[in-house]
Length: 188
Image (cartoon, rainbow, N blue to C red; front, side, top):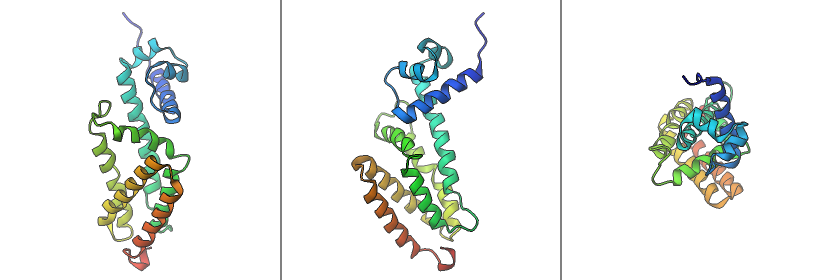
C-alpha cells in the first residue's frame, strides 16, 4: 500500500512551478521545477505522473491566474468610462504584471502542433470575447468586442515580435481615439 496522496503538497508544488514558469519560461527538464518547488524530480513525477502532465497543469494554472487577472481588469467599473478601463487594461497587460503571461502563452501560439495544449490558439482567442462584449455593452456597442480583441491580440503579437512597446502603446492610444468616435458621447 502506497502513501496517501497529499493534495495540499501537490497544490503548493504546482503554484511554485507556475511562479517559476512565469518568471523563467517552461523548462526543458524537471530539475528547475524541482528546485523552484523545493522538491525532487522523483516527487514531481509522483505527484503529476509525467513531465508533460506537469507542464500541462502548470500552463492551465497559469492560464487560470491570467484569466482572473485580465478578467478583473476588463470588467466595467462604476463611474469609469469603459474606454478608460480598456486603457488601464492595456497598460497592465503589457506592463510588469501582465508581460509574464504574454511571454508564456506566446510560445504556445507559435507551437503549430500544440502538443501540450491542443486547441489553445482558439481558446486563447474566444475566452476574451465575453468579457469584452460585457464591457463594450456598457457603452452600447457589444458588437465591437471582436474588433477590440483583434487589435489587442495584434498589438501583443507585434510587441512579441519586435519588443517595441512604445510604438504599440501609441497604436493602442490611436485605436482608442478611433473607438471614441464609434461610441455614443454620453457613454464614453
